[in-house]
Length: 337
Image 1: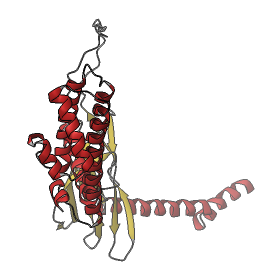
Image 2: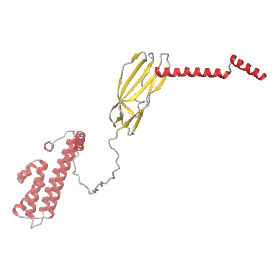
Image 3: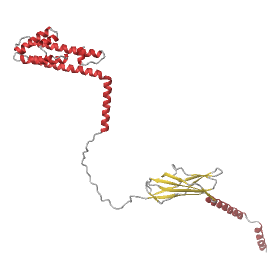
């Protein structure tokens, strides 16, 4: 009975005070229900979507990607930066649509025109969206990842490569071509250099050139005249003396700018007052026209050479004096001054 009595009392005790484990179970169930409601509410209030509008793309060809977000009406939305968040794609264009608001909230959307230069067969894109609530809280959302397939233009083949390239190592001679731009540049540069040299040193160069030319002419006359004197002998006196006198007249005419080639011996003596010259011309005339060779023939020809050498020295001194006076004179003016 005691046992029974005890058994009768135990159920009454449980009905009045439930154990603590049952209370914990009830509180846990309420917490799970609250969290589920919050998650469901959040999923309905903030829904993002990002999809490619095509399944396959081609290398370098544009395609489109649509991005949208449904959010509470009072929040602000910041879509991703086109310069950083769309890798490995490049953004060529973007179309933003106006916000649409209804009882479910607001909807913001945009369509991006992308270009890809990646060669991977599958390419994935997931972009961030920043949501700023009316209370000032910010939330970073990620769009669902979407993939697109790259269409291959060149497909791999298992066919063996039976083509063999023929090797040709023979040298091929190319036709030389004129580099006209370089040629024109060189010619223009040379003209500029020549113009500058002529501007600053032209006068001095011309004077030195003229002195050198008259020096070379007198040197050639001296060598030719000396050669005729060396070959002079009684058997060749008439021929050598005549050639020496003709050479002397031509050279003296160049230096003095007078027609000595057509003048007589007396006219030459009157033009050049020198007693030795008069005697020398008489001696050479006797040898040329009379064939009379004497011991004075070479001395007379030497006198002619000294007269020509004196004329050359006078000509050179006149040119130098004209240069010192600071004015350029032709040879005729120098001789007549």
